[in-house]
Length: 236
Image (cartoon, rainbow, N blue to C red; front, side):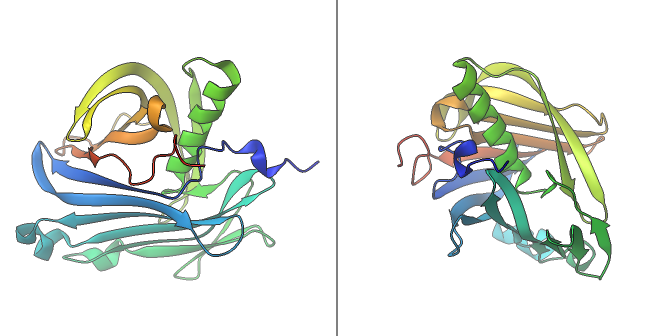
């Protein structure tokens, strides 16, 4: 039996533009933006993440655009297309795009490779929407702060992968946009690749801080620069 479209949290899919500051090991590299907007097709959305390094770094690392096209089908998020594009040194080895062929149950890669597609698989950007929806839905169902773990399967640059996240703490976080009460999600399935997200339950579980680190590399950090131009909790 089909699940009604309302199975997704009503606070999730709201047109929103959020700005961030980007840091590497506490040194600001530039600014970033995450935007969610209707894609022009009913029940479909464009979700994008952009990063703009400071002028002195742009020649090396370049601008980054990550974009996901998703649709709501039977109350679930389904990616349709995804692309990652970076300019700068070595970018050609990193850039890739995906097409999700749901009738054929295939993920089609830019180079022609094909991977099997099963229900629940998303791309690595729309994974953020899946995690937010999980937290929003749990909070709505229980009236309490969510607890537990969540595994998300996604199509990455070369393969179908999965991350397991656990709610580790409820912390106050200071950002350029202010101080927020947050729920902290930690990736727990790989000690060599740390990923943490601090999300604000009072603001639709938007990300107010994020950190990623590979082994001993300096951590990459996002901090909320200012509140979204359209607040998920106030928009209807």
